[in-house]
Length: 127
Image (cartoon, rainbow, N blue to C red; front, side, top):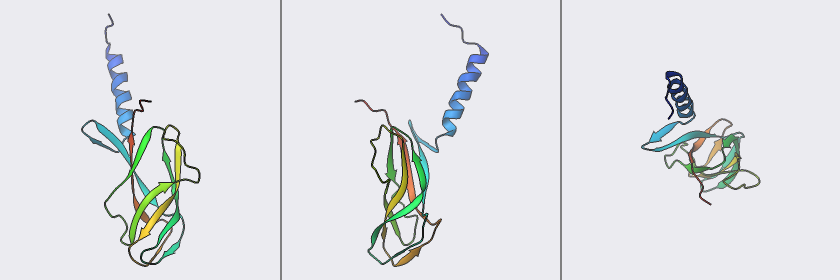
């Protein structure tokens, strides 16, 4: 039988606190991170264009699913995907460095423009 000391309790609380700080949101028992999808180049779009645009790198940890926020973050269009040159399995760490952007209006996307929001959720793989 183990007796929990005050030091053990403080260590556990500290570890839980650090773990919580790494997550941006919690919905019930579901926690995750929000990452801004930021343009890293200037590119012109005509209304209806769908083009791949370079973005500031987004680190996607291993065993995290990514979803795009449905809320429009850019008045000219919406990011449809975040990807990298060589797709990797979910069990590996990934780096998003490009996004597919669909323009609803003709525009010029500037470097550092917000294109959308990526939602990252940790998952436990069972295979």
